[in-house]
Image (tube, rainbow, N blue to C red; front, side, top):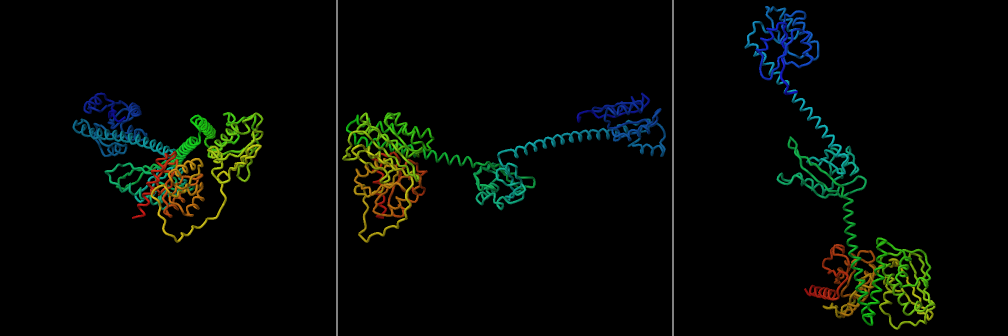
Length: 609
């Protein structure tokens, strides 16, 4: 150990000589051992390490020269320095033999204390230095072992980590490439080491500009940088990554950039899906509320009194709520038509004992399910009040078939009182007609005396393929002046929810406007816009799942002022149309009129400039 004392060995067969020599050598940090024969000396040298050995030349048995030769022949004792102590005259033969045996010096008796101490001090210091070197060697070995352990641990962490560890030089050349980087980017270290991060296609020019900015940053700035980048995967293509960087400087002053990279592709996709789901949920809720608002207003308009309103509105609202429950159980995917019919039976709207149904298994989309729920509720309520279910012997036959992606549903009442066609259609008739999504001719009624027959055709959003019609040339007439108010204004209504469209139309017509057309698809909206004769347009933010960017762009091209009417927030509407106001569903009549009047006034003022 480094703190153990320095040891000298005295070998002499005379005790007095040993005592005298030991007394002269005594000092702190030094232990002096002695032996009276060669065999004792060799035993001690097997137990201890000695910095110096004093050997008496003349000893009985094995003399000092022979002992020195034995020491030189053994690995453990070969390096022990030897000083011979002798009282005899020294001739050249003896001197040569002593040095040949390994002696470093001679001391002659009587011993001069000054000479002895001076020579002993040299070997004491050499011994101390040797111990210090041993200590430093042991420390360096410990440091090296610890370094190797840390490097092995760090290498295991980098290779097994979900992060990619990459080192770049100042020219963005790849200096190191971990196993995690190989897994994350599908590129081996052999392909990337010493290659350019940009030249290999791993980093695009935008990412390179960011990395170069980190390398050029002032030392006063934070040594840790982070940014989101798009880096290239060999098999997948660009992937989204979160990159953390530290600028390191080595001894010659060369800078390197240490990067830790996290693949956030799944997180980005999850954020996009979450944003989409939140927008879609917001849209669905507001569309539902707009439908409820329309049902309430129209029920109130056509009710004879408060009790009549409460009964009609409550029944319709319950039908809508139960349909929502069915869709919630199906996680707002498609739901079976049979499940909707069973729900109408459980609620008491339909009598299961007097309902004959026949048709293949069919699933309905959420929008179709909600519309058909209101339709079946109205049909069942009307049958119970006036039709086949109002008498004990009456029955309802409900049949449907699916062909060429079109669902045809037939409601036939049999055995009821004589039927006469109504003189005017009420809101209930409108709700039944809404089942077809507002398409012309999708819902028809045959008022036979023996029982009414309703035929409902659902195209599931499919529309006939038609050619694009060219825009009409403007007639050579006096320029038309757009009105500054809704009174006399010609409005195009683009809305795929029939009940919402009906409510909007009533509000616009009560304000004095003329609704030129109600269209429910992007293609029909484009055709209606190109047809001209429009002062103002109301545009739903989404038409049967299709974006309305092209419709909005065409309105701008034709200088037709328009506003969005949507359950979506502004962030989910077509971008680049911030000048178009947004009326959120469900809407307030006063807000609708104020927004449209302001839009007309603004457009008129801009035209006068």
